[in-house]
Length: 520
Image (cartoon, rainbow, N blue to C red; front, top):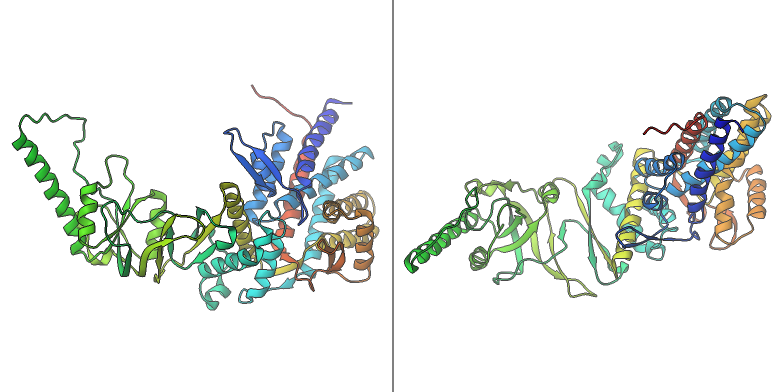
C-alpha cells in the first residue's frame, strides 16, 4: 500500500472502532455503558456524547468522532448516538467506493449532493407542530426518553421537561415569536434521597440546603422581602496579616463590645430596609457571617440562607427580582425581591431540607427542576436525560416540525435516494447508492439491539415505504413494523437533519485527508 492509502485505512479503522463501541447503545433497547473515570468515580450512561467525551481516544481521526457527537449535542441536544452510527456507516461505504478506484474528492462531492437531497426528503415527510400543542411536544420528549436509563419514569419527566421550557418562553403570543430558548434559564437542583418519581418542577426557586438555624430564627416567612447581600456580617479584617496583642481584660471587653456594636449596626441596616429573608453570598476573604450576626438576625425574625455561590447570583436576581447589595449603606427597599412564601421543606424519603421560594413574580422567566434520586449515579443520569428532553423542545422551537421515529425517516430517505441514483449517471450514481445503503444502518441497528431479525425488518420497512407508508418504523416494544405517527413515536426534524448534515461533513473532511503529520 502507498503511504497515503495506508493512512486512510488506519484512520477509517480507528473511526469505525469508536463508532462500533457506541452502536450498541442506540434505541430504546440499547445497552448502557459503565465507565470508570480516572478519579475512581463510576458513571452509567447510554448518551453518545457522554460516553465519547469520557473515552480516552488517541487517534486524531477518532477524536473527530468525539467532536462530532459534541457538535450534535450543542446543535440539537439529542441524536448523539445516531450521528455517530451514521458517520461510521458512511465511512464504511466510502471504503467500498475507494476500493472501486473512485477518487475521494469525487465521493465527497457526491455525498454533499446526496445529503441535500436527503434533507429535502425529510422536510417533505415532516409534519408541522404548534408550540401550544403540549401533547405533541410531550410525545416527542417521550421518544427521546425511551432510550434513557430513566425511561420508566418518562411519564413524569416528559411533562416536567416540556413545562420547564414553555415556562421560560412565556405565554402563547411570546412562544409564537420565539426562535430559540436559553436552557440556562432552567436550573437543575439535585437532592439525594427518595426516587426519581419525587422529582418536581418549581415555578420559583429552590436551594439544595435548608436555612441556617444555628441561632434559631424563623423557618417559614409569608410575604417575604428578600435581600441578597455580598458584604460580610462579621468583624472587619486588616488588609495585611496583623496580630493584636491584648494585655488586659478591659481592652478585651472593649474589642468584643465594639465588634458586637459593629455587627448589630449591620443587622439593623438590613432590618431597616424591610427585609425578612437574607441570602448571604459566600466569601473567601473573611467569614461571610458569624454566630453573633446569625443571633441578631434570628432575634429580628429574619430567615437566613448562607453560602450562595457566585455563579448563582445572576439567576437568583432574575428569578426574585432583587439586586445584589455590595455595601451595607446600599440597603434600600427597592433592592429587595419578593415572594409569597419562603420556607424550609422536608423532602420525602430523606432527612434533608431545602429552602423553597414560591409565589415569585419571576420577571426573568426562569424555572427550577428539583431532581430526586436514590444515589449520585441515578441523579446524574436523570439530570442528563432531562437536559436532553429539554433540548428536544428547544429543537422544536428552532424548527417547528416533527418527523416519524423508529428508523422511518432514514428508510424513507434511503429509498428516495436509491430512486435518484437510478436516474443519475456516472460516479454520482454509485455514491448516492452507497449513501442510501449507509442510512439503513439506523433501522438495522435498532432492530439488532432489540433482539429482532434486522434483515427481515429492514426488508419489510423497504416494502412498506415503497408502497407509500412513509411513517412506518420499528415498534421495538412489540417487535414488529408499525406506523410511528399512530404510536406517537415522533422526534424533531432538526435532530434528523442535523445528524445527517454533521455526519456527512465529518466524513467528507476525513476523506480529503491523505496523510498524518506529527508535529513535535
